[in-house]
Length: 117
Image (cartoon, rainbow, N blue to C red; front, side, top):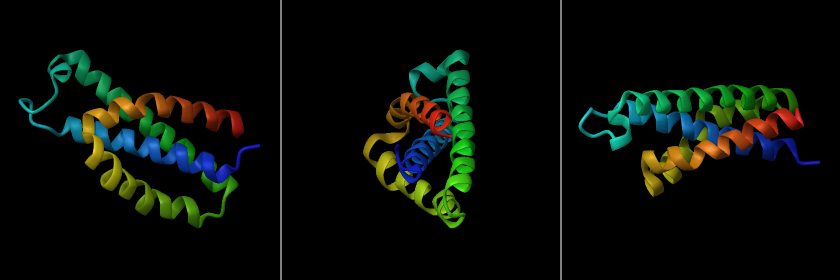
């Protein structure tokens, strides 16, 4: 059996990172956006990826509040997950690479949340 804390931390961190990366890419000026976002389908794909990250983050928070003490998910939501994204993923990889890396990880996190619920 996998510890619920590990599932929560993994699912929350990758889903928050995906949602924040998608939001940052959507806020760029049209001339600064990556080439694939110049097309309407690319823009829609980024929005849908951000939505998947947000929904998985909601699931991770519900899982955390259900299985852990309430202070752990609350502090992670507002402090730990954004700090990990900004200081680690965004600085090392940038928004586009973070989006591409986190997408399959969020799918794995959603499946693990469902499996271990």
